[in-house]
Image 1: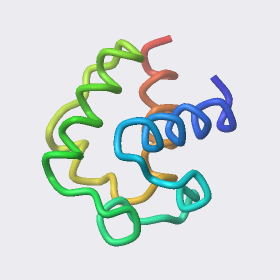
Image 2 (image 1 turned 30 degrees about the vertical axis):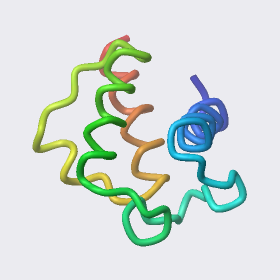
Image 3 (image 1 turned 45 degrees about the vertical axis):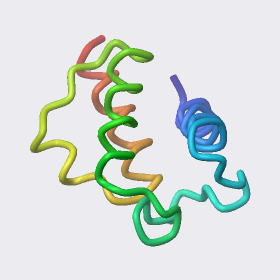
Length: 83
């Protein structure tokens, strides 16, 4: 997957699951401050990523994700490790 494909997947997820306007979902957007997610939402996101992309995500890895770009970078890194 390319960075653009991953970003499109993340934007689709946030617009569908949390009804966040697509124009708000920019790489620099903070998940909690800018997009209004909470810790439960973050866990939902992890569950979605694990099932949708067949990734295993450890709790300590989640703590480093703060922005949309962090999510994209994380998916790209985990996908590369899996390949």
